[in-house]
Image (cartoon, rainbow, N blue to C red; front, side, top):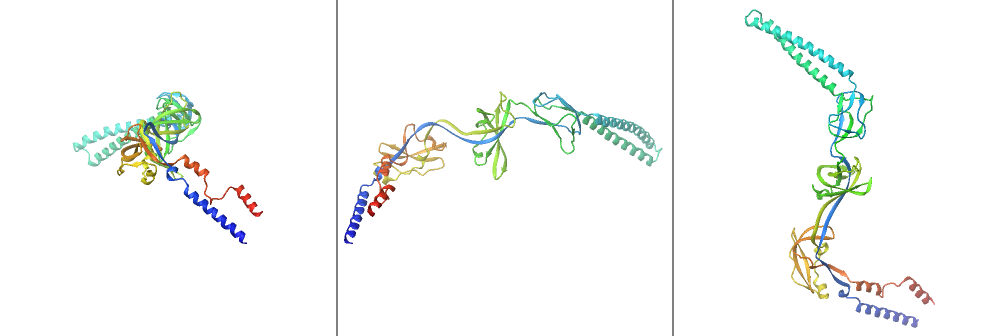
Length: 403
């Protein structure tokens, strides 16, 4: 029993001695921390916004008809090139021609009636002025004259409408372009009751296309007219197409709690590779600055700790000036001393921020404090005596104790 107690006290003493030795010779702050610096240099700063969109013609016209009837002839088909004023379809004219004949007859009758009533009125008016007819006869003649005149106006309007409706049976292209859609066949009946049925869709110029991109509300604030754009389409994955932001539309579109805004991007298409309806993967370059002075962004957040820097034999000269909306403080390293420098910052690309004034190329600034390699090696080789040992060694020690 006494022998066991003695062994126990020996073990406790050995552990305590090991703990004291570890505390005495553990790595110091000077060994485990070093000053991280960054050199002021010129770089190209850029940032971008990604979105998806649809390729569309710049000008696209849906051609329809304002009268109901049967499609008699079609003179244009998919992909046909058409000119403005070219006849592309005709509708059956029999019914409308009959309506025109009826309107013509009604107009002739109204003209005859109007001429007769005019002569009668003039005659009665002359007699009335001489007091040879009564007032009632004069009033009757005036009434018949006015009625005939109004009937003539109505008949003329009906005639003009019949002529116009008949002209609608000949459908022409309103623009020079290419037929990209045909929605009817010969013999098909179309009804223009409440809305104009679409017969053809014509794109004006397929060499000049546009992309309508849906940009997320979180990114739309960075997008403006004139910014450079590149995009790809799945049909030609190895080709990169270029364009420019032409318009940022104010109307928002909300779908499944996601709000987007339409951005119109011009897209030249000289090779006619871009086809209407293709999905475009768009990159909008919201920031592009070449050859600007820059520092690591984290250097703008560095605040010196005099106690740690003293252990690193680095002096702190001066104090930082309170930052404003346009100015920040950087710590410039000269030998073994750092001093504050007020600078004006510009756009940032994330890990680096441009400096518009306050620094020169080649100067060294403090970016922060970091663990030195020696400290990392020490951490892997030295271990607290209170930490558990490797699994294999522990098992061996346990087995020997049992013995």
